[in-house]
Length: 324
Ligand code: F6P
Figure 1 (cartoon, rainbow, N blue to C red):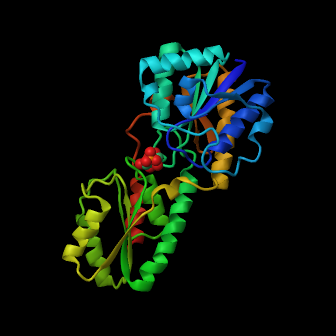
Figure 2 (cartoon, helix red, strand yellow):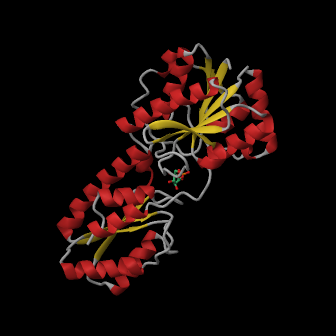
Figure 3 (cartoon, rainbow, N blue to C red):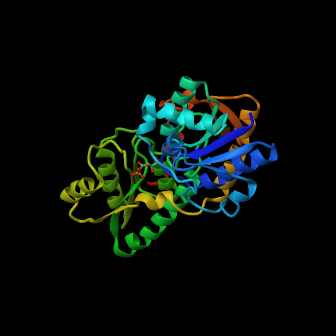
């Protein structure tokens, strides 16, 4: 392998820049050429490339977002789109690709590898932490800290006014952000996409807190939770049977995806960036570099995409106990 291209795709995540930096610098270390692809797979199709050297990635380790920019390309989902991308890569003399992103990114990479036998290594980056085979994805730790900080601030108002706050956090299919930030911020109830508990448990828990003397409450709601009601309908539902609550809703939204990456995410990004280039120079392809028990591991892309991630029952138990 002589020339590696790197791109970021899907939702941006804090730590993507640090991962690009590590890929570029590893290429430099191993005397490989490196090409940055702008706007993810869409830029691959359009040949939006720029040669990157070790100095091109200075002063970005601390920046959120991705300087290569990102996209969710519809065209790359078609065979024609992928064929165009392959042509652009071969024209530019690129012989391997590092893709940084989440499940959509890995699915695209998998198709591309199958069709053209093109060496691909993925780096998991999404605030959702919903990738199988890695303990952490890039951006998740930063997002958790952002969410906890935001909930702490909301708590000040909740307790000053004896209010009930419903706070929506990101996570369409994975409750990792909700469960962990809920525990970290001391939420009284946490609604998750992985559990179809109805809203009865929330109502029971509100009833219990009233009896136990709680004067304010915080309920963390993952955007993909399964009650079938959106957060405003949930608030309405509670207010119908609990006139005593002064309820407010707060949707945290995209502030969760922004900001300077935590040290944890910067170190993880650096390990995975180096790991991705070394995997390619070792002849590996069609894998994700992830982290398990602090060590870099190689996981087949198919495994990374498996949806049956284990739900952390122990953490749910901890949440239940600590919110009595
Ligand atoms: O996958 C990351 C994520 O932030 C999800 O948590 C969220 O559901 C989604 O992306 C939002 O996507 P968009 O920024 O395209 O609205």
